Length: 245
Image 1 (tube, rainbow, N blue to C red):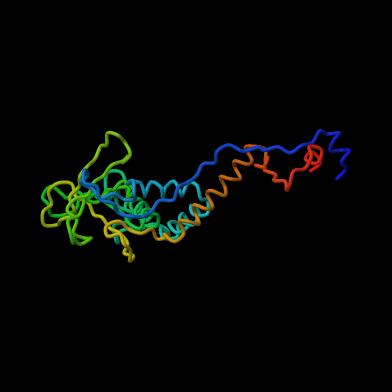
Image 2: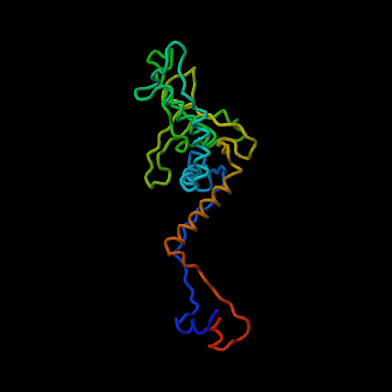
């Protein structure tokens, strides 16, 4: 490097730190019980499924893989023999319901439906999809079986100060009164008893890493690709030597 050019251009080292990078904290897929709540927390702060949805937005690879699984599983949809793609509630056909259930299954490892019985109690009148991320299980008693849940709770925002919470009874074909829910989770051996492991649980760390790598590059682009630079010199060089380096 020509030292005359360095002096001519008044070149010197500097330290430039880009803006704070958004970090996606990894959550643990665990169950927590709190004395003041009637429901079992999903995650340390009851937001694990919300973390999963956020991770899908941040990791392009994860989103593409899950959407491919859902699309392949959905195929051309479903229908009832000799009846076709019938309505299962006022708003959705059986294929539309199937797509939503399939999405929850591949993303979270489970799904939930509200079951509406007919007035005479002899048949099912309607089936409504319930977003799985909004479901919480009633706090269990000791040694309770994971299929023996009496109530489930539904809330669209578990972080709100004033929550609007709906309680559903577990599906009961014998006693068909009240609002009932069918809750299904995929079985995978784990320490969780009532909330499922994700079908892609082992890939969570990789998806978080990818999201942070993309965020790192985006932050660099926002700062015109100028690096965060720190130069360490050995010994005590003179000011002239520092400028040269």
